[in-house]
Length: 287
Picture (tube, rainbow, N blue to C red):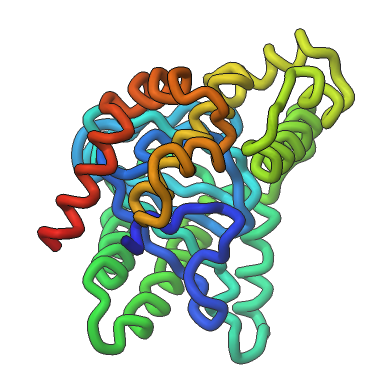
């Protein structure tokens, strides 16, 4: 069940090895990636199908074999279209565990920079470095940490030498990004409670009409839709882990009406909660 460890409030990887690999298909609780952000860098690679990746509202259509980079602090979400994809989330500080030096300067700079997502289909060296990183993390095995460390160092070298790292420029969207970050953090902490538009508007000091407009611009969903999707994800995680029954998982995730919950769950997952739980029970038995 390690691929279900997607909560952004948790550390990616281990303190001594802050790297986490995720393989995501249509059965994953977070198949459609809700808007979120994290301090770590992220690399996304498409294995099959297509993925619409949104980075601070800029759309990047990705096809099979293509990769994209998510810079530190960037709000991002993704809509899969018959897609299987994988991600690596890592703290670039992994390269400076034994003293900063010049390498420390380069990795620290990445946390205040943007990584450009120009097409990389012709950049064979960059693609091969990404392949090496994903391959090492997917297969693990003896001494795989050394392979991962080397692949990350090679990737960062190619990003710098390929002139893909740019210091962020101040722009008008900075304030809106900060507002969205505050909202996402507040929703993450309070999604199990009763939430109104008035509550959300107060978080960022705006009126409800403006809130709904820019919230949908960033997330592709209304505030109600976003919160329902988040609650469904939390229910899926609970059912996959097998710690709670359907009613307990729904109630703990903020659904107080079981009829409404079943309707929303079926809308977003395409199956009933009972069918979803049965799939995981069967899958665990087989594995």
